[in-house]
Image 1 (tube, rainbow, N blue to C red):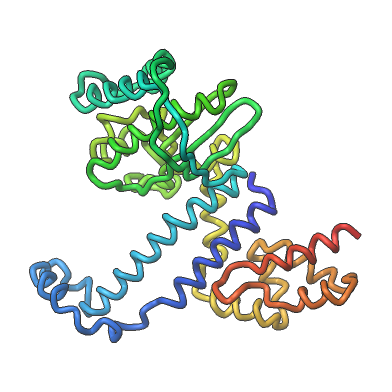
Image 2: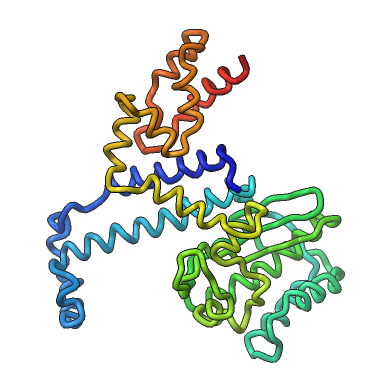
Length: 335
């Protein structure tokens, strides 16, 4: 399933996010005691909050902190893990071109979908785009693929989305992807082009890695009008696809997170940073195989430069891994 090296890179991503979120965790509402507009509006919900929220300012602070965690997951964790699993990248496409007939055809597809005169169909829409490869050449809209990789036979791009996009967002994203596929077919004419919507989990599922595409599409605003089920990678389907597996990868990801993200996290993190007695066991538990190898083979280090790097902190002040230490590891395994 997930290789030891990929587990390590995922663990480093988790650790960085946890360090950041611990440093900003509100210990109480004292930092947000004066929020008169929030308090005034929340008065309308006092009966619903009764027994669930004891302190409104504290609740506001925690809500703000949780929004920060949501942002970290959406803008950092999901993308980073996706790139690690598939050996992909985030890729910009600027200054590319498209046939004028394709632009017109895509506009007609979107009108038909909006008016429900056609149901979304990946195969039909792709055939329309391919059959309209003529007309004047014009500038295409710039776009970014959140996750992109290329093999000998295919190009895969994924638009990673939150599990509750805003109203109207799916329509705009569908048009973007239709145009993007037209552009990619010109850039990679001899390869199969695949462009998906990727959703990291299914909030409608009763299990954390389970999913039901039809129920999820009905849950999304306007998705039924514009999105074919085959355009979506959802929950474990997404993570397993990225690794080239049939299933089970999301379970592995949750296991890695649960192993590291415990109430003892900051204490263990400090033990690693200070290299206190027993820290090598935490390295193993946290999937930090490179650091465990350096620990086990430190007596073989040659040269002052490598020894100096080996004596540096394992993580930087922001919680990100000290990549210089990988040079030490490479030096050891090359001996």
